Image 1 (cartoon, rainbow over the protein chains, first blue to last red):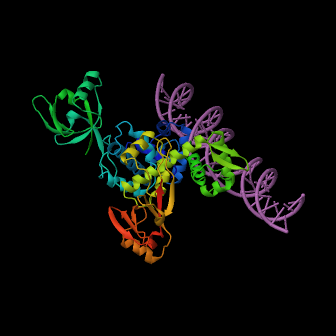
Image 2 (image 1 turned 90 degrees about the horizontal axis):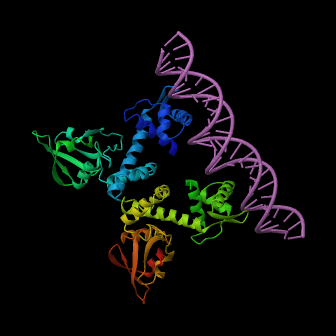
Image 3 (image 1 turned 30 degrees about the horizontal axis):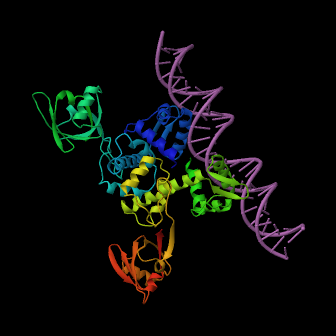
Length: 218
Length: 218
DNA sequence: ACAAATATTTAGTTTTGTCTAAAAATTAAT
DNA sequence: ATTAATTTTTAGACAAAACTAAATATTTGT
């Protein structure tokens, strides 16, 4: 597998949203920032190698082997992201570019050791699940905080309202993207929530909760 | 800089033994496991880019810019080696292949953070010095243990006598390749040495000391 | 259902890094 | 100091991965 082949496999995987959908040549071209004709060429090669199913004009999907390959790349990418954030103090938004490079390093021992070194993390800093060595992993969904059931926890991944007052509120309450949040309890009366964030419990209104996105793994 | 260009720069650097010697096309070809004609092509390109001085039939050497580049690659390689051994429990002889890949990762922040994370190590697991960010570093020399002055320390990098009895002796005394050894004192009478290895002091004969190589940084 | 719009593929180039075979320069040997 | 041996370069080809422009399918709108 060349670097380029790996990038295509990953692109097809992500466009299929983890589900193994058939995706169009154009979609792949856009994702890869390349031309559709280049995609056609590459997809033929990947098909010859048994990594994808390709029917001209009809699109492309991953074979079982292709999926395994994609999951192994995703696993490496996400483990490196955890490493960068946990061990090297990278922030949430600085990790992607470097992980894009690190995900291509070939060494099974390296990845297994890294996994152990990090304590076998289940999710990356964006709340996305890390596939196991065998390629198993939980699905992640994005939900508004007010829709998260009591007892569940997730990673804060975005805001619905991005007005300065709201962002200022988050800042004052030390709520940041990438933080892990657990819903401890809900008040029936006003829909306000008791949440736990970074070892402290706080109480937030329903309005706040309807403007914060969490990523939850089931 | 492409991966291949980086590999050539590193090869020229290593053939020049850290000193900036002019090296032959053939020597580079052998080091890179490629053909001399390929080297000629690449060396012309590197010359156009200002990384090497090249005179046809006369050989090639690094420019100042080329040396800077080489040192930055060597720095990355050696820092990753330390990481693999110290943090991921790789053994002495497993690190090289993986570090060859990791040394090409491009991110200044990554390397600076890694350096800090590792506690700004001065030498890699083979006892070779790690260039600073600015490209400064101490020279390393390989010496027999009996030639090491009192007070100096180095990394055990090899044996002169590799007979089973000697290796058994080393094993029994918990002396292994990659260990850091400090010479605490010498006995005038028989040339025996008091050395410190892994937090314990032991006493070894002169004969043993004449068969162990240390790498010392001045 | 047919023309127009869009999506996809084909054909022909380009660049990078490699190779082989042949030519030229350098070094060594008598 | 010539010839022989070795080293190095040149010339021409090839594979990978990209591109452009043209041709061909498919989809859409009326």
